[in-house]
Length: 115
Image 1 (cartoon, rainbow, N blue to C red):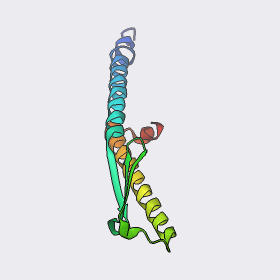
Image 2: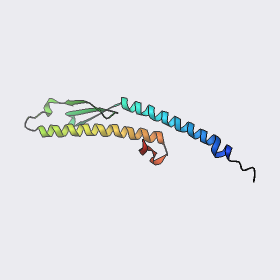
Image 3: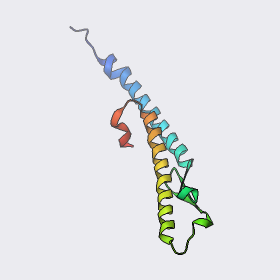
């Protein structure tokens, strides 16, 4: 009974290994975030007459509007196409971030929602 000493079991090496693994995950997370922030995501609407580009930081960097999309009598449609293109580009950036986080956290379940 006196030989059941758990200091070398869960407390020693496993705790150190867990800390090392957590530090590596944190480093991987930082690198992943930096990589995502440098990516750009493009989406279009109206059959391609409006194109929006955003960064992984969710910053709109470009709007390209085909002159054929500009109808002075229907500005509202152009505005709707711009909103649709920007929203889709933002969704692409968010999806890429979620996929990267899922790969990083692996089987840790709900942990990805913490970052």
